[in-house]
Length: 287
Image (cartoon, rainbow, N blue to C red; front, side, top):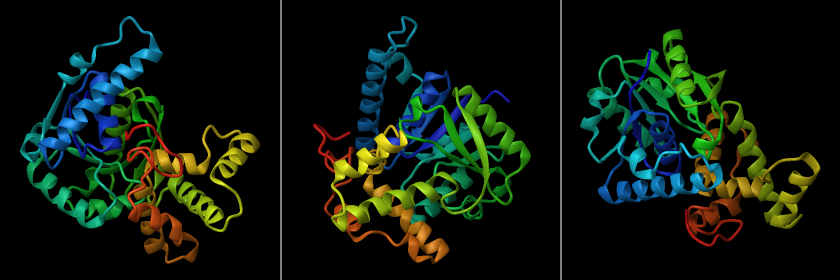
């Protein structure tokens, strides 16, 4: 199945990355968010990201931002998703918000359309229960920045069909990505481990065991990680980290997932990391 039209719901960091990647691989994209203002910002971010990519690739065949943007329709209206063959949802990790999104998608999209949840921690089976097409709901956990990451963690819900998995793998291949299929569980593999690591790193900072730079340097120099856990938290977004660890805490009822108080305080203060310009590190401009 050669998928041509893909819907993208949510134009935050992940939604912008997914839409850009799809457009760069020749897909027609419909990106939906709650306001024209947010969508205008997303359009500018995609333009800037494509230009930035071009500086490093030095590829004579690289397309201009204008050509890529011609493949993307920006709209605050869900009705335009009725033509989408595949929809990738990227909204914030809040259950009450996701519930409303899937109710609209299920009512508007064609029966054969597949829904992929780009979620960090919420179980795919639970998301599938919001629809009348649980067999066509799958998890696609993209990594940031999406266009530059070659691997996607794909999650099979309880009802997800083999046909849905096959189609999802094909779409990812069209996007130039490989996938690893795992079974459904809160946090899946990557975030069940990563969120614990980041949360514990923040506890180390709160307990004054080491500085931000020292924590990250240990992971980079001792273990060969490209980024330390606190740098990674800034890249993902501290608000997303908090949402994810709260989902794990609620799902497993295990104290090891208790969110660090310093993490909560920083999110309350609006210190989200790269996207706000300030997190554990200071950035020249918000992303």
